[in-house]
Image 1: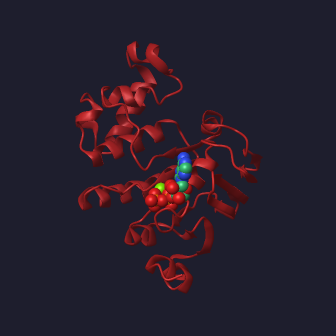
Image 2: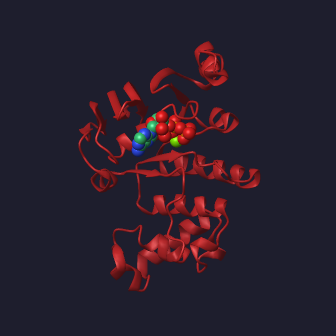
Length: 247
Ligand SMILES: Nc1ncnc2c1ncn2[C@@H]1O[C@H](COP(=O)(O)OP(=O)(O)OP(=O)(O)O)[C@@H](O)[C@H]1O
Ligand SMILES: [Mg+2]
């Protein structure tokens, strides 16, 4: 299996805090790969390093064989790797359709893009993806008027609008009610299987990640503690200890 994302010895410090310490892991092309770990173990920091949100203090990152360690968010997004946030980053005072349109490079960005009518392929793709996410009937509502779970689905639809080859999802199910969680999981699987998009998912919900991911990396105290299949991880003493706070 080809490794699409390869992280080698990546470290990141914030002042005296070592948020990531020499982490090496990889994500196979076409996989659903999970990342777990207790609060503050460095999961979001690693995503931020991967997508170019901040410079790393050491190590290297390649995406599809290309060195991306020093690239920033827009350049990495153009290469096909997109991250969604633990907190949603939608524009509440814009409609769902407007949020979708400004995620489409063909439509353009910024104020000018907002004032432009949404037409052609941008409109068709926006509607199709909103429909896929169960939001078609809400397309003309302000995004800020959606429930939290619907806002996360909108953010997911916006990420798909960018036509990614790899999606990094930071706690996609956090704060979503159980009915929406099942729908979201089905959609994640379809995006992976039907569109061939690789998913790298941070998730606190063990039931979700054990069912979804074929391989899982576990962080603790900024270090990679264990990697393996869901069964390996479930039975790993070090992982159990980390979650029980016993080390
Ligand atoms: N911008 C920042 N400035 C200073 N410290 C930070 C910053 N971002 C993260 N940290 C620290 O780095 C460590 C790792 O945080 P991170 O957010 O990566 O953890 P996490 O595994 O995503 O946690 P959670 O499960 O709670 O989301 C924590 O000690 C956190 O306080
Ligand atoms: Mg986090």
